[in-house]
Structures are given as structure tokens and as C-alpha cells.
Length: 363
Image (cartoon, rainbow, N blue to C red; front, side, top):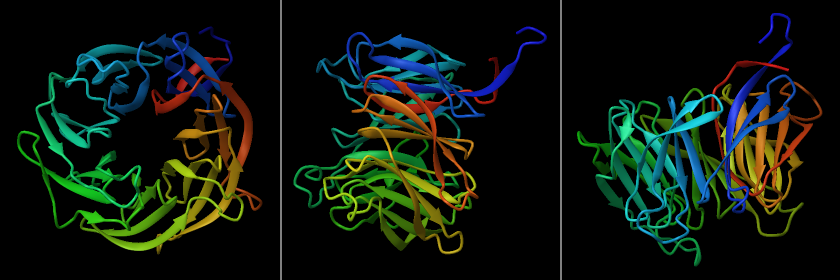
């Protein structure tokens, strides 16, 4: 970088594309934090389709769809993050299982992963910072009323409680939020007192906490709702429920796909597939209740959502084959969401994750 070179500040993010044999793989991008511009930096081709990526510290954990049925495929791939590059550190398989999320406990001595297709939560020991093998498996046994998506358990999301004492798993197939206690060797035991059921046909997809940890919000895929809960000592009490889209504006089949909450706790954003929208809800910080305040159209089939600095939202649209950035303007009277007019064409993006932040680069 020259002495008089003009520079800009960027945040790095990664995108997984299902694509074709030519363009399937992992892409690295810059997001210009001054204007929301999307800049492609690198691409690594993959044979299998990426499903999810989760960054934990300096490592990125990627999962790939097992499209061959072979026992050696699928599994979890652990990469070291080096700005826009990913270096393979470890890989584990488990009889060809396909996982959709990986999280680490607070001591980083165990990882946990969920298998949507087989309804399982697995324990993975970590030695010298690397995942080793699947050591334990918990088989979920839920079901509910939807004849297609709820004939058996389908875990969709994991997170630890803010005090790191419990692992939470949302079970779309069983309409249940399940709390687990960790054992000394990573074994998981269901906490029957804290675990709870949602209304039949809800289909919980994702859970986020407010910044003060007094409220939690669950995105329900089948019912297209967000349920708000007051939280005290990890006990959830239902407060409110809102639709993720307007039935007056769209009468087709809608499927909410992702949800984020701003770091300052003021807004929650949801993307809807079918309605093909991104919707802004403002939070009442005292009651936790949500009020819809804005909505914008996206490209076709929004799949994944990322939030940057409480200022930009990035939407990956699988069917539309694009990445779009939107600007958040909190104090504008007319709206909350604004187009940046920056878009990037990419074949079938399905997952995203943030990398290094506050990187200074030459313009």
C-alpha cells in the first residue's frame, strides 16, 4: 500500500453457492462499509454443495450436502480464516451424515452439530483446536401436525443461552425448543423443565436474543410467524406473536428463511421466500413486542441474511442468483430500509458468514 494511496474500510464475508460443476463452491467478498458495495475477491470450487458456514473464533466450520450417498462424504470441514482465504485444518465424517450447523461451547473443548435429515444432535470433542470425531449422538423423537415437514424431528438451529449453561436446539418437526445440559464429556441431557412446545404447526427455524437478554424471538417457518418471549432464569414466557408477511399483500405460499436482530436491539429483520421480501420490525424495549415498520422487495427466493454494523443488510437470493445490500437508516421518518443499488450475480447462493472486519484496503 503506497504512502499516498487512497484506502477504504471493508468487512469480509463468505458465501456458499450450490451452483453447477463450474461455479459451485465458496466465494469471498468485501463489503464497503461506506456505501454497501459488494466486491468479489476469491473463489474456491467444491465438488459438493455447501449448506452452512459458522465462524467460531479463528475457524470457519463448513458443512456440505452428501449428494452421493457415500459414507465418506458429508461431515464437517474446519478451516482457518485468513482474511479472504480458508485453510483446511480438520475434517470429520459420520457415516455420510449431512449437518446444517456447528457451534462450540464456551471452553472450546466440544463442538455440537445438528443433522436436520436424521433428527440428531451430535457431540464432537476438540483437541489442540481441531475437531476429532463424533463421540455421542442424541436422537430427537418429535413430530407435529404438518403432513410434510413434521412427520419426525428436524433440528434447524442451535445456540447457547446467554449464561452459557444450556444448549438450545429448535426442532421444526416437533414444534419444540429443547434445552440441553452439557456433561463433563460433552454428553447432552434434555432439561425437561426448561424445554417447551410451540403451537402445533409452527415449525421453529431460528432463535435470537435481545441485546439485554430479557427477550427472545423465534422465527417459525411453517406458520410464518415470529413469537416473542420474556426470558428470566432461562425460562421463556410467551408475550406476543406477529406474521412475517402481509396476507393482504400476498396470498401465495410464504416461507420465512432467516432473521437477524440489530446489536442495539431496536430492529428485527426477516426475509420471506414466496412473498420475496425483507421486512423490518421495531422492538418495544420495555415489552418486547414487535411492530412492522417497513418492507422491501428482494430478488427471487431469499435464503440467507447477514447484518453488518447495524448499518447494512446483505440478502442472498438462491432462485434469483444474487447478493443484494440494503442500508438501515434508523432515524428516517419515511422508512428504515433503503436500496444501496449494489448487487452481485452469483449462482444459487445458500449460506453466508462474516469474516475479518475493519480491514483497510486500497480503493
